[in-house]
Every structure is written in structure tokens, then in C-alpha cells.
Image 1 (cartoon, helix red, strand yellow):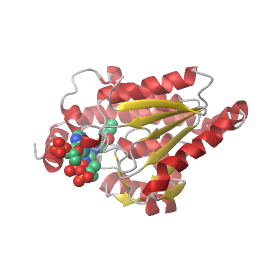
Image 2 (cartoon, protein in one colour; image 1 turned 120 degrees about the vertical axis):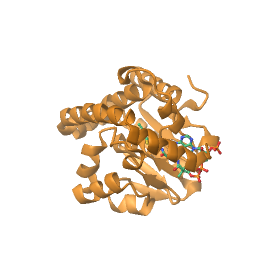
Image 3 (cartoon, protein in one colour; image 1 turned 90 degrees about the vertical axis):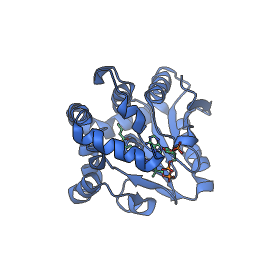
Image 4 (tube, helix red, strand yellow; image 1 turned 180 degrees about the vertical axis):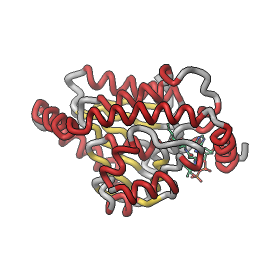
Length: 251
Ligand SMILES: C/C=C/C(=O)SCCNC(=O)CCNC(=O)[C@H](O)C(C)(C)COP(=O)(O)OP(=O)(O)OC[C@H]1O[C@@H](n2cnc3c(N)ncnc32)[C@H](O)[C@@H]1OP(=O)(O)O
């Protein structure tokens, strides 16, 4: 368990909270492991009928910890981030997200796996993979064009510009934009509403919604992972990540 991921069960909802404010909730391998453990536990326990993933009311996550990228020394297969992505894809209960402030990289792509996504007025989404010499992950090269159409997905994934919650809502990426005060309570309320509905009907409906894209998504995720970890070991990416770290931390 990571001290940066907290767990709480309330009215049938497991709330996984990302809590590393001093680094804008950037995700380390320990944190991915804790998120995976949380999802696996939720899957096993009948009293958990939905999961809410959230950060604070001012920050969701700045994405993968950039320093962590520099210190990866094990084969991708063993990496918690890879296990987390596979777990996300196969997760069998409703998944709700509340994203405030920064939602960068995997902070945006993980939302594409959620059933309900709520964002704050201040949320800034960004998919800066190419800036870092990297490629899309989490199945986003399939899910994003399906959601918003190819031209917009290509713009977001190739140019990597940040965009706001209003734009994300207009594109159909998220369900609703709320004030920062409303966001977390509203997302919790929606998660509890789902958790209170007949479980078998919810699970079967969710399966039906996901079934048509399941195989293609799995293939895409695996192809992206190969490409991503090849890119991560390239000189181009090492240079770009070093520059990004210098920009955000001065290191
Ligand atoms: C498989 C997954 C792939 C991916 O997720 S790829 C995406 C990787 N993420 C990024 O490239 C985002 C990098 N961060 C940023 O662009 C900015 O930050 C934000 C827009 C998220 C927030 O900006 P602001 O509010 O001005 O905060 P600040 O001053 O830049 O950062 C505050 C502290 O947070 C640390 N930090 C921010 N993001 C990361 C990160 N991704 N990895 C590691 N540390 C990060 C900084 O260093 C600094 O910390 P210190 O004050 O101790 O220097």
C-alpha cells in the first residue's frame, strides 16, 4: 500500500484518493500498485459495487512521475503501471472519476475507461506524449478517436496542447463540469446512486456497453505498450523527459 493512495468504502463505493499534493499527485510505481490493489479488492468484494477515483478538489494527477520514468529498471511486464492499465481494462464494476485541476497524461487517458467522468471548472487536460518523445497509452489511440472523432483525437494526441473542461464536455469526453466545491461531493453521490441500483443489471449493462470494443482495445493496449517502452528507452525521449523535469522542478 502506498501512503499516497487512500482507500475508503462508503455506501457500497470504494473511494480511491490520489494524495501527493506536493508533486501534483504525479503517479509512481508504488501508487499504480496501490491503485491496482484497490481495484482488485473491489472486484472481489460483493459489498463494493462501484469505485470512485479522485484526487483533491484542486488536482487530479500530473500523470506519470517524470523522475520515475528515468529510473525504470525492470521489464515492462513487471511494472505496476502496466498491471494497472491491464486491470483498468478488465475491471468489472462501475468506475467513476472526479478530475479537478491537472489531469495530464494517464490522468486524462484513465478517464477514457471510466463509466462516468466529472471535472471541475478549473480542470486542464493534456496528452503530452509526443512532447516527451512518447506515444499514446491506456488504449487512448483507439478510445479517443472513437469518442471525439479522428481529427480532434489526432490534434490532441499529436500536438499535445492542454484543453479545458468545457472543451472536454463539448467533445463528449466527460459527463459534466462542476465548481471545485461541488465536484467531489457530486461524483460521490453519483457513484452511490449507481451502487444502490440492482447490481446484476448494472454489471450486465456495463458488459454490453463494453463488449463490442473489448478485443480491439486489448490489442491496442498491448501494441501501445510495446511502442511506449521502446520510445521510453530512446535518446529522443530521454532528452525530452529531462527537459520536462527541468521545466517543472528546475532539476
Ligand atoms: C504511462 C503514463 C504516461 C504519462 O502520464 S505522461 C505525462 C507525464 N506528466 C507530465 O508531463 C506533466 C508534468 N507537469 C506539468 O506539466 C505541471 O507540473 C502541471 C501542469 C501538472 C502543474 O503545473 P503547476 O501547478 O505550475 O505545478 P509545478 O510547479 O509545475 O509542479 C509542482 C511540483 O510538482 C512536481 N511535478 C509536477 N508534475 C510532475 C510529474 N509528472 N512528475 C514528477 N513531479 C512532478 C514539480 O516538480 C513540482 O515539485 P517541486 O516543487 O518539488 O519541484
